Length: 404
Ligand SMILES: Cc1cc2nc3c(=O)[nH]c(=O)nc-3n(C[C@H](O)[C@H](O)[C@H](O)COP(=O)(O)OP(=O)(O)OC[C@H]3O[C@@H](n4cnc5c(N)ncnc54)[C@H](O)[C@@H]3O)c2cc1C
Image (cartoon, rainbow, N blue to C red; front, side, top):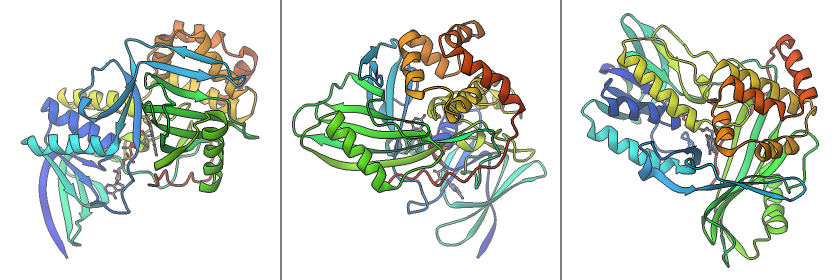
């Protein structure tokens, strides 16, 4: 069954996840373009619910979708010593994907030029005057959409070749404890009191939602993900032996894999087709953080379209990517001690500057200052080596699925 063109809009966004919905929101909010978002119908083909955390100063428009915020951030060094920092005026925020979807779907429904189409995109290609997306509707019909620009956020089938590819892989439990065990003002970003793997590094991550409720995660930066049983064992050890939560129940679980790679992600897939989100290189290689970059990138794309430009800026600057390539390689080769490195970064850098550094928003001078407080010898040796290393294909990281 097929049907001819079923509609035109200025922009078609393929994939209604973090990047697709953020861009669609920005386009209807600024009135820059009419937009159709193509997202498969609910079912096993869609990613399960997950949480996206980021920091900002409360100047985004997603307040309704924010589940929790934390004014203070904490790391625990490998020796167990805690370090709490206050990144004011920024706060750490958590958005649940289901709440974000509800917010943006409602915004699209209200906007005269906004539309959400439940379909699966099969092909995306340039055509004279723009681009065309062919999709399959839930009833099996083939639909064709035409637009001036297409922004495609579908996950890539394979990651581009890289000099270094690590994975940030994790499993988390939404726990409810019998007594009050958490301080809802403090997010534990990295807790290195967990046993370290032979390669890479591991840490606990605790986001309290109430005195007796939290998302408790076990995360590794290493070359391969674990079995669910291995995550469960590591999480159980962290919750019981390190956090000493006492009696608790697990309400839901979240599991994921985020590639940490210095691969080059092509931003253009055609004259009128651009990649966005993780597929377009929006994931910061050394941290896995993506959501904040996606917001900045969406604003930049809306501004470019407003100026009538058809080029899309890179989601991360060259300097930030170069620093991340060095750090990934230094971690992968074991030349630096990951837990010592990240704890030291928090200990020696003012919190606001550190968050700007992680967002790629620091000046060259500030970066020198931060760099001089890291293990200079191993980092310098790695920096000199990295440009000469070949990029090669690495094993596929698997799907970053969440499991309820
Ligand atoms: C469990 C988990 C937790 C994470 N937590 C954080 C965090 O706290 N902070 C942070 O900054 N980053 C986080 N990340 C990393 C990153 O922010 C997310 O992976 C984010 O979802 C990436 O956004 P995206 O739009 O590129 O991809 P997605 O959000 O995965 O969106 C891609 C969309 O494309 C759709 N799609 C796929 N195929 C088709 C098709 N053929 N046709 C139409 N649509 C299609 C999918 O249904 C999906 O909705 C997390 C990742 C995972 C996996």
